[in-house]
Every structure is written in structure tokens, then in C-alpha cells.
Image (cartoon, rainbow, N blue to C red; front, side, top):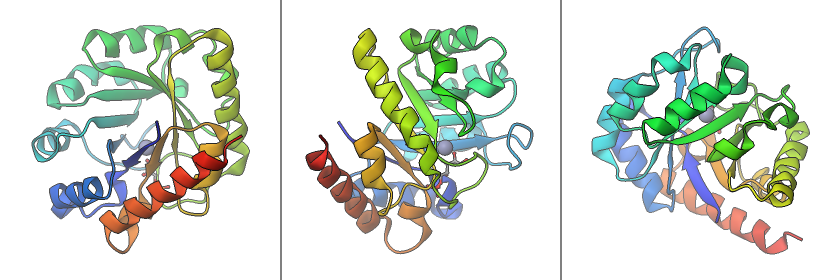
Length: 224
Ligand code: DX5
Ligand code: ZN
């Protein structure tokens, strides 16, 4: 099942509740929340208090993408604030297995993320304990960057590995997903499609979400 996960990074933070509601009216079913610490990535965003406010503004699952050092320290706070899904970067975790179990032990879905320069093979020992794998299709830190086509093969690789080994994780993509790239990511096997600029950058989030989902559905029909 294809799902659209608008990233609030490109939304108007003074009207977050309304922006998320509009995207949901357009068919979005997950809210992607980018957490940055100014260390792991060269940008700063939000923390648990904003997640707590969002929790009251929507019933959609909150997908918290942690682009932070030492995520273990903050995982309980994000779950407490209302995060339903939590993903951590392979590159930021010294004890990835422990961190993924920590997320699960708090009752959230656990995801692992790889940067464009990180091979999917580095995840081979954790694929049986994750609920989703997030393939970054830009270098994390900023919205509205250009999609990196060289990341598509990792979505394909993860889809075939899942079939070969009988795993259940879902495949998420994040970065540069827009009308001109959404077909490629869906055909490569991505199922949870994060889009920030393409939903909130300009125009009406509802209309933007509808168009993206329509393009994704058309690509599913063409998938061989
Ligand atoms: C980048 C973030 C993304 C970002 C995507 O570090 O993880 O979620 O918001 O934005 P777009 O869709 O504009 O590339
Ligand atoms: Zn993200």
C-alpha cells in the first residue's frame, strides 16, 4: 500500500495544525516530522514539545525521523510526546541493534535510515527487527533539495531482499520526492513517500497531496 507522508519541515510552523489537516484532506496518511540537532546534520529543528502539540492536532501517525546524535537519550521523550514511528540513522548509532530494540520497547514502530552514501548492505543484521527502512534520496538536513537518482537501486535491493528472506519491513523514501520523481521511487519499491516541498512549498497542500498520490497510483499500475 502506498502512503504519502508530508514532511512538516516545509510547512508554515505558525499554522502547523491547519497545514497537516489540509494535507490529510488531500489523502496524506502519515505525518513526517524531521528532528535535527545541529550536530548530526547542519540544521536545527524541533523537539518533543512540538510533537506533543501536533499529537493534539491530528490522529494520523507521527513519523519522527531523528537526525540526531545519541538518539537513545531522546527516544523515550519522543514516544511520551506522541511519536508513533521513530527512525534512527545507521550512521548515528554505535549500537544500532540496542537502539532499535529500545524504540520497540517503548511501543513505537522502529525504522532505520541510510544516507545516500551508505550501502543498504550495512543493514543486513537488523532487517529482521525493523518495521521500516528509510532510504534518504538527498543528504539530510534541508528541505527542497534535488533528488539523487543513484539511491533508487537501494529501494530495489531492499524490496528483493525482503522477498528473498521473508521479512516484513516497509520501504520509505525521503528527499526530493515530487511529481517528476514519484513514479521512479514507486517503481523502485518505495511504499511510504515523504514529501515536504512538494506538499507545503507552494500552492494548496490538499491539492498538492492529491496530485502526488494520483501520480504514485499511476506508477503502481505501470509497475512490472
Ligand atoms: C531532509 C528531511 C526531509 C525533508 C524532505 O533532511 O529528512 O524529510 O523535509 O524535504 P523535500 O521533500 O522538500 O526534499
Ligand atoms: Zn525526513
